[in-house]
Length: 441
Image 1 (cartoon, rainbow, N blue to C red):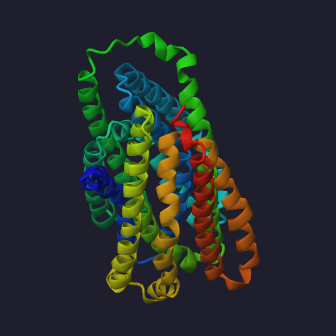
Image 2: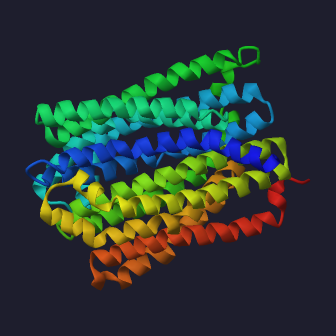
Image 3: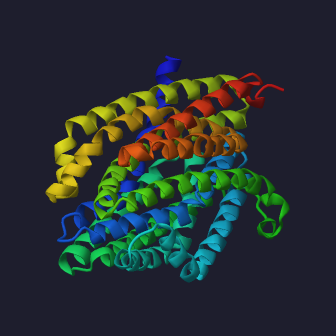
């Protein structure tokens, strides 16, 4: 009976997050599908480069989501409502400060980032325009990260679902209007995403203030938001996540840059394949988020039994979802490729490298699940070290040795990178398990 309840709890948390997580790459998926049917692949290639840069600049601060989830889940498990209110204020101020700095320095950062992607002049100009528009939403995006993380920590994954679905609906409508009807190309795709980001934030703030009213009986001093000491734990957790995320995004950007160096056709094919990879990774993230929330709550309650239950149930379903994704991608290969583009040459390139998309969910399932465990326990230093090892000791050496294989070598190194993340995290899990994660004094 307890097993059934554990699985039900996982599903209650994971399914809303799975749906909302899948809707996140739909921003890029819709852009890719619509732009892939235009007369030239230049717009699609520009969005591929631009989206990679935007992801790097914004998701580099994804610790605002992960760190907030970790601390909120523990505070929720311990019943510390004042700490939850303080954490919301801290993460919000931190997000707004970083977001406005990104907007301020974007005229300097964007040309440099595009130049590093090694794209030609026309493609570079289109990419810069796309990025500049998307980065106007930086404060809204980062504040949304904190809100989403806070609600996941509160075991409420329905709010992130509502936010993501509403934002994606606005983005789809914007794509149809700006790109198809007004023929604005990659610029229109950027404007549509900008409106989606704004919608995401407005809905998140509505639910956040509604939740805060329920904590009105808990004492709280706004003076704490101006003092450095209360930020110490948040900054310590986030510091390691920041480095870890930078290394991850650096690896992904390197992947895109190497694809761009092989020409617009390979770049466009990789852009389509990566959208499918992102779709599968965000689906796996749905259960990883459930892991974060349940493991963090177990840490707050200092319960080894709940910790074990959370790991076993979420780990099991992560593997099941990975297998399901592979079967879905395999049976739907032809319609999926046709959805993205009707260019025969581009379709042939996508088909040629499609087997890598089928392999990646199985290879990556372990690392996504264990990411959730380590975020929930706030052992973020372990995540930082394993990511650095996976990138510099596995990804880059294998890419260097397999350059003769062309784009296949690039995908091989990316696959090995994700597999290594899972292996290194599993070793760290075994090490931490020896001390029972500090749950027993």
